[in-house]
Length: 279
Ligand code: NAD
Image (tube, rainbow, N blue to C red; front, side, top):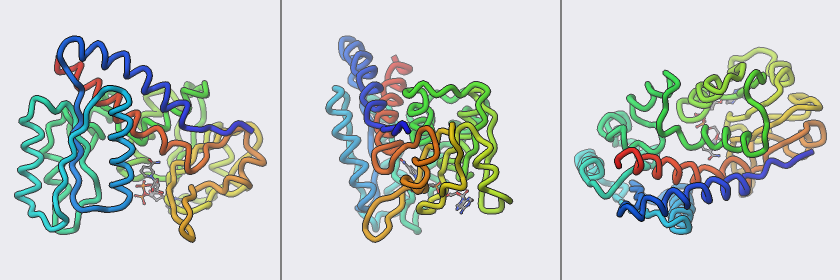
């Protein structure tokens, strides 16, 4: 069984970006990402720390804009407009979910699509739908990067995806179709889920349900990618029962240490692309 670790893939993407960043810096451009955070949620803060560190290690910059949990919609809108108008900012990540009194829809339509580092605006979603995403959504793209890094062919492959959310499942299905995979999207109403899962060459779990993918979901020869992040008894685990599934499948990505380790590298790559596009 091959363990599909994310770190080597993340390092390769970062190294690729470093070369591009040096070339941009030589032309007087420092790729810069704005991170807009409302409140102080633990997972946002930990992702933010990871992103700031990765950008610094590659020679790119981050600007954290932190608003209090109690901020008004007007204050949030002003922060987004500030990002749009600042020529020194090439891309932006806005943490979601926002506190309940704030409108995510409003923010999505306000952010300049050219600076949309995580494919949240309707214009970016439309481009993705048409197979023309310039800055792909970070987590779905991280899955693609993981599979590419381990030379797992996508063209013609049967891929079963568990999850159809707007953030992971649906955009990932579109990215996979763009790579000529044959995609089956499963969800809570899918009948005979284990059989659908076993039929795939590549099984991707993005359900947010701890260890729901058991040995009966897999078969020898299969590649299993775990996108899930769950906390059980204070410990992090994925949607895949790693021990049970890795005893059967050919390759499995761990949690932590799999897809999640690649997302900030994709964020970096998107920021570099946005800076290059501006030039
Ligand atoms: P979500 O709750 O919005 O969507 C879950 C989807 O899975 C839904 O479409 C639902 O129909 C389906 N689903 C849930 N339970 C199921 C079941 N038992 N059988 C079949 N289908 C089922 O979640 P999301 O935002 O798409 O996130 C999915 C998981 O990915 C979560 O664990 C989340 O924490 C994780 N995630 C990881 C990263 C990362 O960087 N690795 C990023 C974003 C989300």
